[in-house]
Every structure is written in structure tokens, then in C-alpha cells.
Image (cartoon, rainbow, N blue to C red):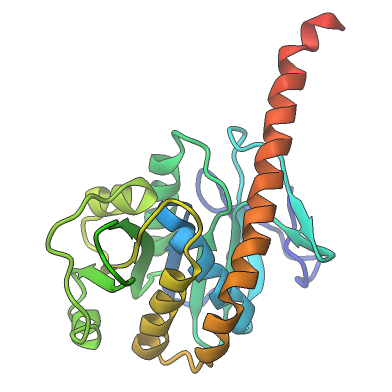
Length: 253
């Protein structure tokens, strides 16, 4: 069983949901859950990684499934796990995100996120997504929400009136019945990693949740982080392809 770093060995790490393993007594009730998974422009992945890098988060769990290739990446001597669950006790924020997504797991991850939110009595869920808009001259941030408090905080940005949503966020919107859910969409012009759109989403989150993150360095560091993330994902995908090739040739042995 996987064990979270920095937690006393005497405490058991349990599988909280179908795929989500977590130290169950660490996260306080009423937390805000922020999820970001690969999509257009990798906006969700880049934005959530920015959050983790710029606030005092600790890893408290991860999503594990046998459909996910057992691949990790090492960049600058740091280990990138595919689907970590991070927690900031000061802000009471949980971040669940991923570097690469196996097709067909969107509904399972959605169920885990919603069930986990119920278990910890989360105050709200915030989903971060990229919104493909090749006609937009600049990246704007739009939102959709059933959360009255968040609507008030986000009234300075436009509501998304038309658009197509895919992936885990779409599944969350379909299956959610009673939780406060807000979606932040960073407009992106292509399917390559868009660090500018991601930084603009962080700027909105920073103001809405009073995160006190210095936003200016995020824009300056965006391209460098984008390049590193592209390398991590490329290497991870390459290893996955190598594993598939090895499995295909296994009959030779």
C-alpha cells in the first residue's frame, strides 16, 4: 500500500474511494477541492501545478488505477507522480490533478472526486479547464457556477454562455447533484500547452480565494514551466509506448 511522505508510519493509508488513496484524518472538513486534468492547452494541469509550486502544499494521497501506466517522471531531481492529491492546511485547499489521462477513466475519477467531496464535507469544487477558441485574439477566463458565493466573487469576468466541455469536468457537471461546483475556463488557441491562459486562471483564483500568490512571476516563469511540463509529458508518453511495444512482443519469450 502506498504511504504518504511525512506522515507517521503508525497511521494507515487507506483507499478512500475506488481509485483515491488518502490519509483520511488529515484534511479538515469544509475544504475547497480544485481539480485540473489534461485538456485543451493543458490549462488545468499547468494551473494546478502552479498552485502547488507557489503555496505550501504537501502530498497526502494519489489516484491509483491499473488502467494507468505505472510511469513516473524525474525532472531536475524531482519526482512527478501521475495523479497526486495535494493539501494546504492553512488555506484548507485540496488539489487533485494529473499529467496524463488514460481514456475511459473520466467517469471513475469524477465519482472519486464527488464521493471524496461528500466524505470531507467539502465547501466547494473548482474545476479548471481549457476552452478551445481559435477566434479569440487573447486568452480570457470565463466561468460557469451554481455557487452563489463564487458567482459574486467572479462577477468581474464573463459567464460562459456557449461552449463544449469534455473530460472529468464534464462528468462532474453531469453527475453532480448537490455540491457547489464552479468551472474556470481559460481560453486557448491551440492544443499545445498554453501557459499564459493558465496563469490568467491562477490570477482569477488568487483574487477569489485570497491566496496571496505573487502573480507577476507566474507570467515570467510560464514559458519555462511550459517547456519542462512538455518534456515530462513527452517522456511519460514515450515510456508508455515502449511498454506497449514490449507487451506486444512478449510472445517471443
